Image (cartoon, rainbow, N blue to C red; front, side, top):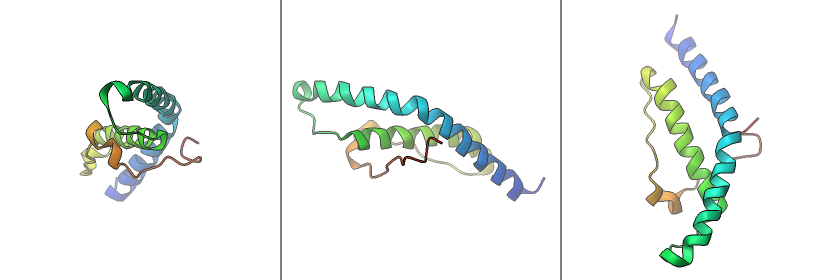
Length: 98
């Protein structure tokens, strides 16, 4: 099979798996945001927005899926550590979980 066809199939599979798993990850990220919101006064953390937490979760979900599906094709996507959650600019769009 040509490498381009294989890469296209892997990318399509990546999008399908990501779309399904976002239905699980987004509610978990929302619960995580609520927990960090309640713990913020205890640890004196800076305020985290829901969009940053969901974006961080989606970036790491994409990195995990890419490690499995795209790494054999030479693509390496790094994980984003929790310490960088305040610097996340990525947002999940309404059409992403479809």
